[in-house]
Length: 467
Ligand code: SAH
Image 1 (tube, rainbow, N blue to C red):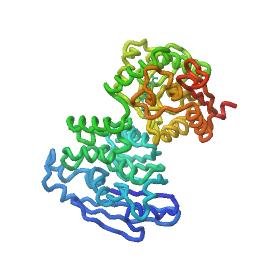
Image 2 (image 1 turned 90 degrees about the vertical axis):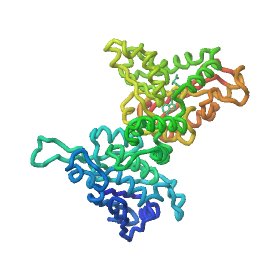
Image 3 (image 1 turned 135 degrees about the vertical axis):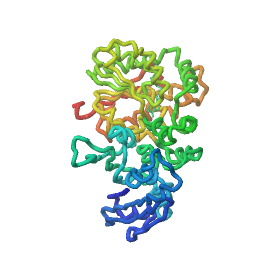
Image 4 (image 1 turned 60 degrees about the vertical axis):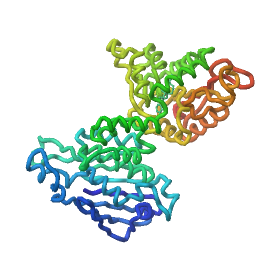
């Protein structure tokens, strides 16, 4: 089992500080199930690679462990494939780096640096799809090499063991956490007993990324070896910790917001404005990101111009409601094939969002934590890159006009911020400059001469196409 981590960050030998392992030395560590060796195949100012080689002592594995059939104890893939043993080795050998500690270079820990990690012999019984599903939303480029099961018998096809290379610009501590959690998820055969403390480990190492990962249910249940009560416990805590809104609380908050905005039926006006802009653009393939209960999707479905409609939301409950509202199970096949719903998060790169003409992001950005907005910006404008993006958000200046809204309060309890017109426009223009989009702004609802309209909308067109 071999794991290599390479960087071209300058000076590349900083990797030695981050990993707490000196590039000039080869070190060996005794583990309960074998030995780990750390060495650097290359260490120059421009490129540095650290390797973790794991030697599993197959005899130690047999002790105290029965197999389903007698030979299984001796004939198995455990010594050769990346598995929970590798996670344990990462935690023991690179524990300080995994926890994000580096006393000599504290700022380095917080800096995303170009990293390339290769894991040789990574099993994925669900093949390439699962590998992509797990790593791509975290922003990595994947390179996969597969191997024939037996070169003598090409008909047998390829084995389900891969060499995986992940390339990305990330903090080393995040990279190690991703590997620590996801390698055992792929292998799906933990070598040790899974109890309550595994929930804690999962939440600790999943902090900051797992809650919003589109495959978080699968990750959690495989990580906890399908133990239902542990899985439920972990998922509930993940939702509490990080995911903005998925359940009853949201419904209550939504009702409050609806009441505040009711007099104008502002939401209908907003959807009308978004729909008009989408129609005028000539778009056929459209995304509704943070689609909620599918109100906009309903309008889109009525317009034959939109031949591919995809709604995406982080909340499974919202998607279920959307599916009911849209009567997805009763649509004619022709309509049904125009629309699909995806569970996913805007905070992670998602290849499923590529190749669309337009994206609507209606009343969603104010639900994202400000420090995570930049991830959203890159995922949408750098990676998904639809040629048209329509974003709406409340205009905070208008709040003093709402009779039912106490001064200084936001319209919805889950809103992380509400922006003035100047703030929204500066943000959207900044995105335009960074990613090559031209922004125009419209107001939605009755326009007050002083505070403007209750809602604001940016229509952003990709510059090469805007002419
Ligand atoms: N666009 C809908 C819903 C707006 S409410 C409408 O106008 O009716 C905000 C929605 O954003 C919620 O459904 C919430 O689940 C979703 N959301 C919040 N954070 C998200 C994220 N990181 N990724 C995707 N959707 C998110």
